Amino acid sequence: METNRQIDRFSNEIFMNLKLLTILHVSIYKCLSVAMILQFRMRLRAVIATLLLLSNFAFGQTQMRQINELIDKNEDAINLIKEWKNDARNKVQILENDSLKSKEALFNTQVSTRSPMGAIIFHTGGILIDDGWIRIYGSGSDKVNRNLPNWNKGKTFQNFGDRPGHLIIADDAVGGFFLLNGGDLGNDLGKIYYMSPDNLKLEQLDLTYTDFIYFCFNGKINDFYKNLRWDSWKNDLKTLNTNEAFVFYPYLWTKEGKNINKVQKNKVSVEEIYTLRTQ
Image (cartoon, helix red, strand yellow):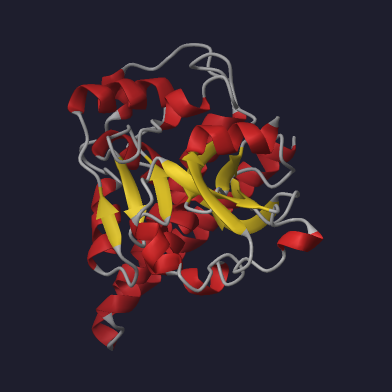
């Protein structure tokens, strides 16, 4: 019931945006800016993508859709991702993908390329933000070996096609993880949570997946990580493989670990850190 209410809310938002678009197109010759029209178009596409993703979470798969049903050549969200990258304030690196692995990953995730998640899985091997400080999962690559569906299998669901309670969608250089709520993290279906290395509780970010991608491209990352970046973090990051992350001792959530400049820092695999945080 709660899921249906959330989907209804997004449907109503789509309707309102369509009304606004109609008004804008009718009034375009009355000196409304093109930028304003494009802003509404982008917002509409993002809301539709979120609705598609919520629907995928809301209803368990009874039959896996074929790959050709998931690839939308007419309204592929990769075009939106590329637009955002071109205008990004932060450093964004889109990693090359392997076409066979991409098709397999998209099929196993069962998300359309009309959504940013589906587009990132199908068209990229992953995305690095701020020289690899944040790593967004795609279909996997040498630099980000965490293929989104394979990485989540056994962690957030057991079999491909299952309805996940949440999905791990990205991680960062300090051992933090970004989770997309599929229902078991709270009633806010479709919102992103952060598993921070300095907090034993999940932090709700009030962002959808699409919002999260846009934040990574354009948000104030320094502000978000203000307590998790130490004096020499830029130099230390250069020595870090993007399949690794820093682990700190004493742990940052303890009284002794509150000053990140004074704790010991070691590099370990992301898999090891996830196991440490969830065991």
